[in-house]
Image 1 (cartoon, rainbow, N blue to C red):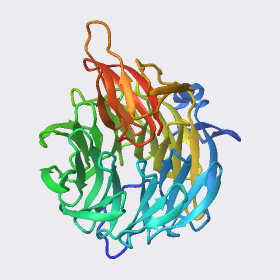
Image 2 (cartoon, rainbow, N blue to C red; image 1 turned 135 degrees about the vertical axis):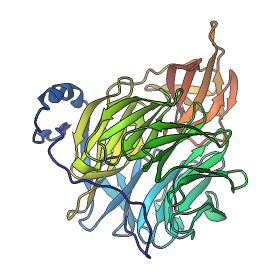
Image 3 (cartoon, rainbow, N blue to C red; image 1 turned 45 degrees about the vertical axis):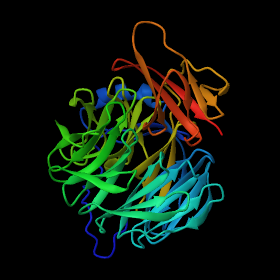
Image 4 (cartoon, rainbow, N blue to C red; image 1 turned 60 degrees about the vertical axis):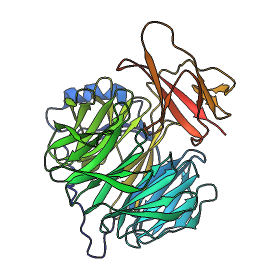
Amino acid sequence: MRHGKGTQRPSGVRHAGDDKVKVITRHTTGNKVKSLGPGIVAALLLVVAPASAQWVEHYVYLPDSARTVDVCYSPLHNSVYCSDNAGNRIFVINGRNISRTVPGGDAPGVLCYASAVDKVYCANAVSDDVTVIDAATNTVVAQPRVGDYPIVLCHNPVRNKLYCSNFNGQSISVIDCVTDSVIATVPVGVSPYTMCYNSREDKLYCTLYGDDGIAIIDCGTDRLRATVSLYRGSYGICWDSTDSKVYCASSGAYRVYAISGAGDTLTAAVRTVDHPYLLTYNPLANRVYCSSSTDWHVTVIDCSSDSAIARVPSGGDPGHLIWTRRDRIYCSNYGDSSLGVIDCPTNRVIAEVHLDGMPSRLAYNSTGDRVYVALKRPGYGGAVASVYDPMGAVEEHGPLQGPAVTRRTGNATVVAGGVLFITETSGHDSQTRSLHDAAGRKVLDLRPGANDVSRLAPGVYFIQSLTGRRRTSAARLVLAR
């Protein structure tokens, strides 16, 4: 991202790639093998078989002047959006082609798709505004002014609001996604950065990079509820929907902190690898995955015990992480231009896919089982890679019945009419179910009988079933209008 106006910004550590990491991938043009470092022939044998199932399906190359920042996906139109920080534009990609170029503000960066209104939002860091794109027509419908240097966006699907952290403005702007107007500006502290939303308590959490803490906002009133002080360098943040805890990576403390969603208090500090960076949550296993900007590993945290249970080797300079319904973690390795794939049940790297550029951000298509990767290619413009992962399907079953279930399509249950019926479970074990969106965020606790899902946006969801604290099944669900 381009920075301007004397911007204070978080320092990111980036390493030049070297040949210490062996990479094998399956591409549509054949296998590509990078040079091997010493002592890794054994690792090669472990990678070859699984890697044949993950490959780069295709690249969409952007103009030479482009500098990619972020990608997001619109499931209703099967479109990928990529922001170009240098050209002040957003590319719309359908299949293998750029179908449209949408003008943005000055230095467009982070993207966010709001399914309830079918719009794409883009934070423009230098012009201090947010571009709003109608995803059906791919035209700009609004560009509200926000605070100084907007840097991260987070959508609240329950209240249909968009939250924008203003890194230099010491505030968070709140945008009504129906009117696309700013309805509140919340002062929070120095250098607000990454955010996550807690749908159970209806709260927004924002890391304060300059104040070394987390600001907690009541989304009903859009007022600051509390500030939790942490050690230096608050970076990544995510919400554990099972236990309703929020996890925050503190780079200076070499720890990931756990905060109670109900009590707004610090409950645990988990020691990780050096300089923990970004986080993602796995709702099926109730675990948090943490990348490190200096130590080439991903730490796995068990949320029930708040303890580190595994340390998984990654490629060079791991960054953005994303969980997929195949129960895998994809990790962008900026330093050696690769994408790591971690099998969550075993916490082992099953593939490391070489890419034609340095990966920054990832987006997930849960219907087509694809991960889209924004690539930086200095001197050659940017690109977006489509990575297809067809193996290891999640078991698709669940006690769904009633008039709302209209049909089965593939391995998903399609529900229309705004009501989801769940049958009682048999046996002595108490079973609970919850509905999660495609990003793994819990959006609804389910009960036996009729469940009102009319307020939820159409799209792909997952039903998670728990017996005690143990996950027993996961079922894919499509909500239709």
